[in-house]
Length: 389
Image (cartoon, rainbow, N blue to C red; front, side, top):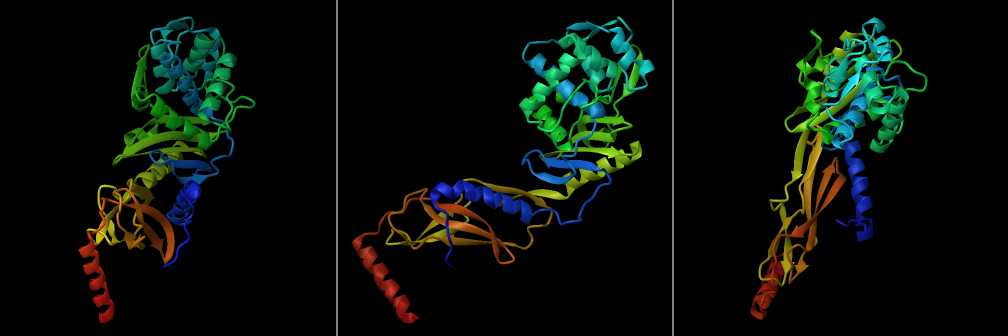
């Protein structure tokens, strides 16, 4: 069968186009999954593939999900030696009034003018979602909330959060403060990959400070997730950013705008289960195994085994490969001598008769040219085969 191959300079473009095509071909069927969350995104961390999204670029108020950016700045400062967990900061009257017990929001219950370690403040920020902890951190590390927010935005731009802007470290309503679910998912991935030693804090079930024990508000921690954060204000509704791992895979989900704690817990669990249970990672080609052979003309052997240079692994909806076929197309008969690693064929994957991916194959070993008598014998044998037809 005749096929059009792109010349070498365009193979990178061809690979990109094929990869995009695979996403389309193996996407979950339309209407197969839906959530009541107004805005949501689900990403497979290993492949970077978006498994589900709904209005993921709509700007919304962040609520306490902004504290993920606050934590990122703190971890970065500690990593760079600009701060230490042993540092202590005084609880200002502003932090006490705006984020303390009388504020009506989530709080660490910090006593005014008390000196607190950064280590305790980090735990209060992440586990208890303390608004007072966020303000003390901002004032202690940058001098004010506004200056700390400047650092949050600089860090956000460096990470690649292109549609988010922060005005304060806690996420309470403020003009101009907004995030998107896509940006928050990117931020969650960054936190997990860049600060693996800090990430376990997000799975701590409770924290006790000043004799008061508070539980982590993330409902998925008891259902298989291992982080990150919840948030709620009247303007944003109930939101959540979470991550979970299973079978060597990790997913990140971000969703917001739900109307109740119960809806958030239910929908987050559904999205998490969809990401972990409805997709599978499959190996279409293993580079360690010969997957076919190509004919050799005038060689010391009649064929050469074919190998791919690397494994071809894909994340696909479970069971979606049932009707995918693979055909090995050789470039042969290949004239001898054949060098190991020489391009020698293609593995063509098709669905419904339409090719969806072509993978180059290479000779797994060298084949020398046959001697004169061997070539004569081969020619005679070929003639007899021709006469028989």
